Length: 153
Image (cartoon, rainbow, N blue to C red; front, top):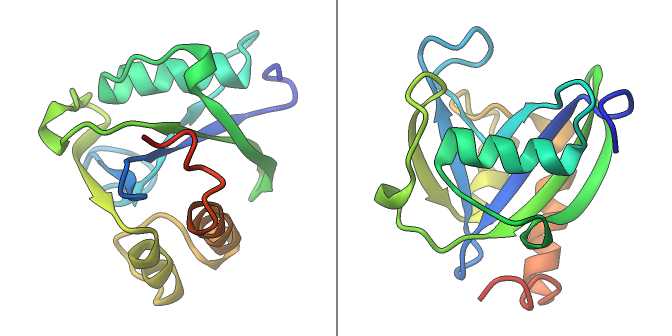
């Protein structure tokens, strides 16, 4: 998918325990400073959503993945932008990520249930609001029913 159809990407980074990695946005960010979010980014002109996701993972977290390690999860229009969601498996410990200090201050593994609770309780430390709740509920069902088990080892 080229940038004319896709403006943003987001990546669910999952470990073998079914936890999701969130990154805390830097205090200097214009949008959502000091808030927890997925690995996200804009698709550059002429770039596919998949290539943008791979680039953002490398730039922000020091995670090097091949195209075949990145799985499409869903896409849709959220807010004013079209976002393409992916997931990857990654069993790094928190201190193994090489974070881009201009973008992030830290990373942390969260259970899917705790993220859902944060969204439902309107937690001010997470970027996502109830309009994104279905994404996390779908991810929970995928993990619960073993749909992602072949990818998360």
